[in-house]
Image (cartoon, rainbow, N blue to C red; front, side, top):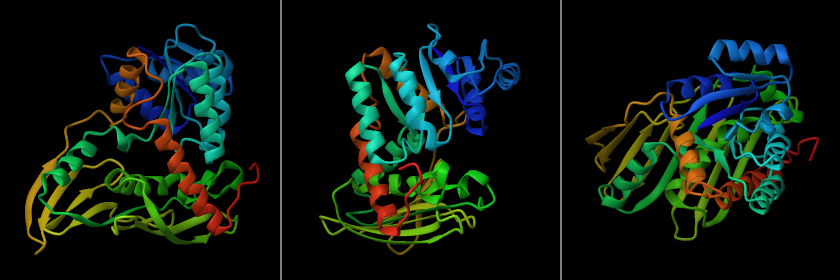
Length: 322
């Protein structure tokens, strides 16, 4: 399948490397904000076509899937551009800035009968199924509590500080701990308590979220851009617990007894970058005539945006364009 990349930043480079190492996908075209940047990117990563505007990329009849790799503040406009041209879209996380945008863009894709999915890669990785299987097996007993955290020292990254780019830790980093918890416990949340600290620009720099579910199970999520953390997702059960190491691209899953004795370690399969799974899931869905991926249906993306909307509202954070 011929794939185009919209945006020529760092994450686009990761996707280009992924596509170039895949046998079942081709990095066909790059779209950037100017022609010289597009040509430089195409030369470096071997794209056949280089476009100096996103409109040109979206209108190329040869492109079969577009990966939107721009900052999430621009996801709505760029995804809409592609859908209106009839182009299937794999949109980088965070899917949109808020639930209003998510609902509108999903409705447009469904109305136009154009495939659309969110590139929240942890939902496509093999580790998700592996964790599910361990929980279902009963090895750790009934789940009682989940913790998940992800932190980086990225406070000096400009886009993280800028409200007009939907900056802050939550949308960029916090979506991963919240997604890990959602994948384990679902979305029947009864109560949420949360807080954050803010940058001088008014976006969240670190946050903590406590979730209580209808069945009495609880979870704690933490994310931040001030310091690196151990980046674990931990699922506690009545017989033991499991630790998923490297939360947003799990490298190993370790199972412990309730006496904290390691009884099993499961390594994840070797990968190119991990991005290949979301690409293959998208290609499979497109070929089957589906409008979404079963790994992350539109409804699931909307629920996550609603949760993050609620958190930002509680913290008094609103982006200037909202």
